[in-house]
Image (cartoon, rainbow, N blue to C red; front, top):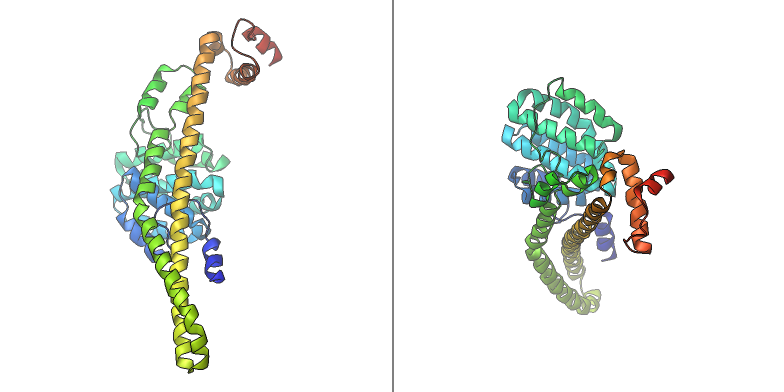
Length: 335
């Protein structure tokens, strides 16, 4: 029993998507069922991140399936890679390093042979990865794929989830003049929350099933405990049968543990997204209020704007916004 728990803990927590042990066959099956919807991409992304210790095998399987996919399916595969890259980076660099092995060549080929839509998808992803420094300084080399005439992109090309539609928050960002506020509002956060919530709902059945299996297994083990003494006094065949049954129940419990950890991780992801959305909204509201008091800040360098935001934020926490607030001039002299 202890070995089962140890093996289950060997897999990292950190994503939803159904749980279960990793096999390349299982991943291939999930990739075949992948659709272009944000929920489908997020669910499989969470499953892959949950098994991030198998990052090389995940990426190798992804590459094989990508090479055999249709053009439309390749777009979904690329969006999946984007979701995995952005959401796994804070947990470790396994997928960043593994995807870097294969993406440059695949992107170049798809950019040249995927038609106009393929060009836009590649350009959009490269722009996102460059802005968010997903590959660090290596992102610069990806821009060479676009050549001298990259395709024109629409306004929501920098959203974190390329499959999402522009949200009302994104539209409101067009009215905000501050570059920092624009970055906050064009974050794809509503879509992330919806997807994370859907992932929690999708796994309700898995959780209920796993808990029922656990109860049944506990009952079986309690009965086996009574049979042990009897097996010790009888022939070896009964003892072997008990060992086989024990191993079977151990495997069931291990699978249940993985499923419950996956459900728990999906809830943690949802809570994290909600907290992040709240923080962004609070900061965005503060910056809007700040610019109402200090409209001249729009005309100064962005680096100095950042200093002013920080100074004023600390001031507001310590006192209150009023006539005694620090002036732009005094803040500028300190910067």
